[in-house]
Image 1 (tube, rainbow, N blue to C red):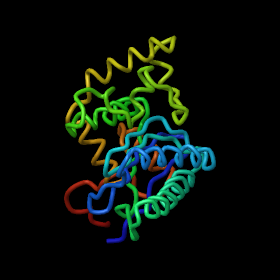
Image 2 (tube, rainbow, N blue to C red):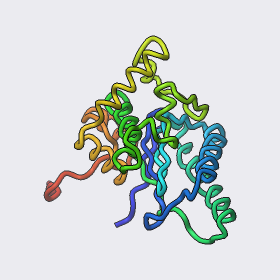
Image 3 (tube, helix red, strand yellow):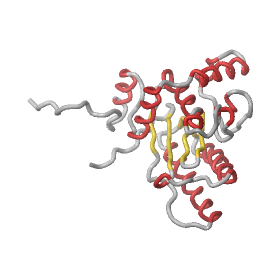
Image 4 (cartoon, helix red, strand yellow):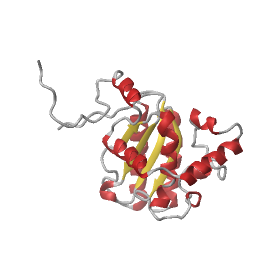
Length: 229
């Protein structure tokens, strides 16, 4: 079965995952991680992509971002990915592929899924057993969002401002969201939607998206298709 084209909608947040080929490491050391952040900052401006959150783990990159143009996300990911592989291979004296094929992504209904997505990303290093608290992991945007380490890469989503009337209030409110965490089912729904490319949101949100594109935005219902009259 042919793969569906990626679902990209300008002006809506997307959760994106790019993994190493066969689970291999895409970051050997902190210099690699700093290079990735630098490239993302450069190309985000060029392709008009607003990055709301990021997470760098040894074998993958996770992003929460909003493209201003329909082709902005693909252009951004391709430019960052290709440039990073060339520099990574030169630096580590290797050749060949680094990424596991295409990046995976989903369009999120912001009101219900943007902040939970940020929390789920920030808690990734905790779930992986790398740290015991999200703020102890240096290679995510979590410390920016709780006021510990300002990060110029981050562009706040409009929903971020609704967390409080002052920076301190917003940072405290977000820290509390991270302490509360995200339910297993909600985290699983986010990952499955991202890996399969389905929109994630209410039935009304998904139906509205479907009217904007001929590309199917959700999985088919189980069972046989209805017979034609």
